[in-house]
Amino acid sequence: MWRIQSRLDSSRWMEHTDNGWTADAETRLIVLDQAGHPQPMTPTGPHYTPTGADDPFCLYLIGMGVIPAPEPSGTLPNAPGSLPDRADSPGTVY
Image (spheres, one colour):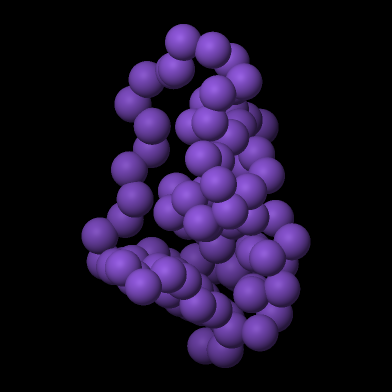
């Protein structure tokens, strides 16, 4: 389980558990729009291509990018350790 809480705005947060994820209304709309799409791992890349709309690492990247002054806690998802054989396979970092 992990949680991202804004240090500037207590109403902005996102949480992921074994049962899925939840967030405040504003964050939820943004996450629903971006989930399942490649996300930058840093402001200039590389990008991570998720394995699906509920990919925990992708959700974490979105939360860290949209929640102001994010402060993560809990057991954070791991970044992929190596590149897959094909550039277009899920979980690809490019």
